[in-house]
Image: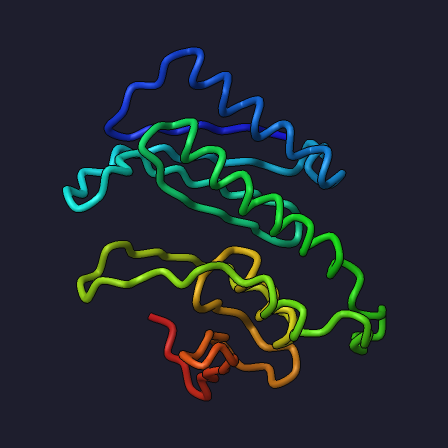
Length: 194
């Protein structure tokens, strides 16, 4: 496993860096895929200037375990609190990933033991979105997967939407979580790449 640690607005001591490293390498016992050298753990620690909360440390972990991305984020008054909270979320997502790993047969047919209802039982708390654009992401490579895989990926990274190339329709699509906690898919019939 490759480990990357980034901090912004906060200077981490060697003890704090070691604490984060130990917590993240401890996750290897939950998923053997993390032991693989091709997997990467990216940790981002930020100082949060939010005056309405005493949780000034934002801790985000992203696991790149081919072919999925698993992500968890939390805040705490101390680095240790934020790490522990995010690690707990990550552990649950890794367990969910392990149970869903072989849900499709090689023919692409759905294996009934793994259902989307089980995914909705373990979903994360909804994140409140501010009306202004807080972050912008660009990507050039979109995975070609089935809709149910896109919904699982959406849950694994803890987002409300996921952009993918739909293997069933051949269209660029967006899977998203609706307010009633069901899922929707937006398909782009015409898309002008510029």
